[in-house]
Image (cartoon, rainbow, N blue to C red; front, side, top):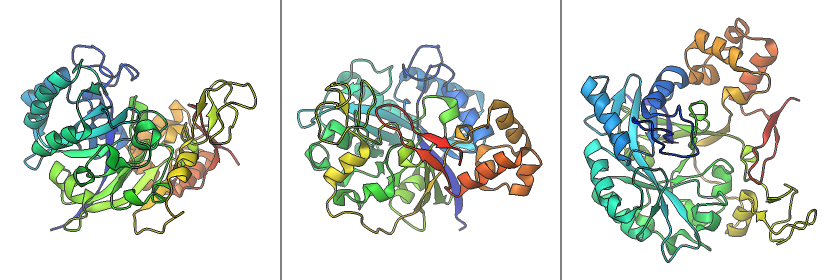
Length: 390
């Protein structure tokens, strides 16, 4: 039995369905299921993608069409194979029951088209519009978990620290057990403004595998954050084993943006974007009371005993190629033409090979990005941070 490494991004949205109707309103119209699979396979080099709007009936129809046409096939151990990528079918759902302090987004993944169709049938009576993404679910968090488990699925709280619609943002006051059954949580998704080291300051999270996913709303953002997993093959059952570190399967490394690049890292005024001390209710600059609490400050509030040295995969700070200053669309395409996928360029191509295609300045930035050597201007209040030249 030979285990191999696979790149995995488990949080990608659908902008339009097969009938050109909207699924995720805020997502790109080009973000169709087929386009996501092609982009991941042909340009990104991502081996496993989780598309989290597969509860929508029209998205399921598109999957059925791909299977009928013979360009995709169901995998015996769960998932859909398309070219060089495996699709894991999932759903992002908004939980807001009487125990929640605010709405909480969660990710539910299923092994087969049949099981997610069963899930959709169940959701119809508990959701106002099954055709759209990230919709409010009318029921308890624990009842949702039970249904996911009944169908052989995985349950993962999403972007757990972002100020809006997350578990620790406004979802719970102190602990996830206020809303969920901890025994039915399979992993935790960190989100763009946090990393493993920050999350491990909260004791109740330390037993979980951490995931770093893109939450992509456009084709270009696929692989903005991802992980490397050691698996026997790219399938649902192997993914589940990796989350529990069974039989040598595991998350081997997390790759994500420096948390300071996330748009909710610092506490700021929503009106003028001035930095605000955490806990202050009014902006000292403009007087606005619209304060967005930063992820860093929220984690410090929840921290149990400061930084904790845990045995975890290394968290590498990286950004997609198009985030690098001076690397425009034409240069990006030259790199793809020469080296096929973004994963090849970020992880494997030597500096000497890069110099045959791009300038030394761009080559150095790509190599520095590979090793997490970035100069960062912190983001906050809905504005992303920036990668800076030296």
